Length: 562
Image 1 (cartoon, rainbow, N blue to C red):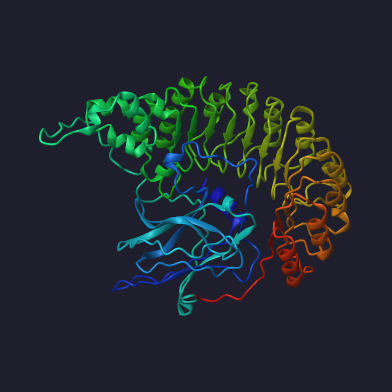
Image 2 (cartoon, one colour):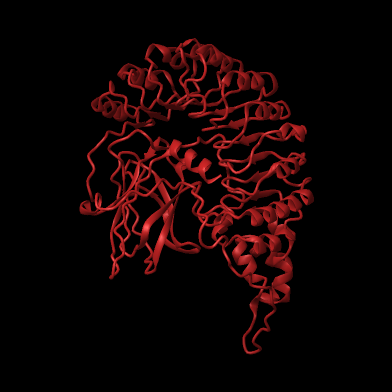
């Protein structure tokens, strides 16, 4: 299982981390995130778009939204007292938090507002909100939100600040999502039992005079942690804070470092009428994987699903590994399910889903990106979700061809608005298969980044432009053979187009950029990163003339330490 995960990691990124080791005295190195100058393997950071984004299930528990993470392991324990980040790479990223840990003792080394590491017109510059961490750590976890960016980015390398340290020590293997099988298997946070406190007779309690209805309204603004603390104040507060009304929308992503069997088992009693449940990252961190514990998680999750199958509408299990075939069978017994997200679930197979899959008439969003979904299973699911509107299957390398999936969508999912298959179908199909996109007349979002067909043809773009009048966002990144002539139908017919992404398309010239600004009245964002035929001077002139359009043409620059 570990070998499979490491092999998959090599598809996304090569991360090199060269920290200074700790000898007889502590060393306080500075680190900088920078791009790698050699090699072609990297992790592409793309905005998912605004159509199918996951909205926070509980806004009180998600003040600083984080959608993705990287985990790095140091060669030896280090001290991060002088940890700083600098915008020295060519493309931007939004860092939300950075955690440092020695196996299971998580310490927050950075926790500030959204931090854009590239200064564009939308950036407020580097943040200086750092927290000192005097303890030695072995692993850091970087949480970021790529969706706030309107353009693409690439994370290349995590690198030592001091040039003299870069070549003295061996390289650390890539560690995105790597499972450590050594040390502590699970977090051992103790659950504080609910208890009653007697109020001091010398102090006046102003809340006692408030009606219960007012107290309910006040508690409605609290996050889960605050509710748990309020339940320990007195009997009245405990009764109010335990009301099931406060647990209809639950987001556990913020509490991944405190998540264990005890907390989930205690919370299970309060999830009897839950409608939205987000368990992203729960039980998915270095040192967390244990087969027996995983089975216990599955049992509790199945019990929750059995009791809430009539009320559950949104379920997110992104980046978790306690799902199984039995769990999937229970999920597909929820008739009112509207949104199902299973991103990055590699530790179980989605094979044979169709055996237990019933018709989900309410399902509108399905995210199986980075998962092991197979073509036959996905087709059966699509046949039983007639009202599906958003389909995300980025980096699903087990999918062999776009043609059978696209044909199924055309026949069974006519309401589809969003299709995202970045990298999934790279050079796997001929261009004739793509002509089926023209039959999806409700299509608004189409992401075919790194999905250039072979042999190449441009007729499918004409079919989309003529039939998909509602198209608002089109992404054709890394299409090496795409030309200005191919985009003429899009620029002529797709008047609703507001986002056009053409990064790394070397044959696109300034003509396409000028025509897009002239012919597309609703255009707001256009990305021409690494388009060699488009000059910086033209972009600056168009930016002055079309002030409502955001142009992204990020030029490469030399590495330097700020």
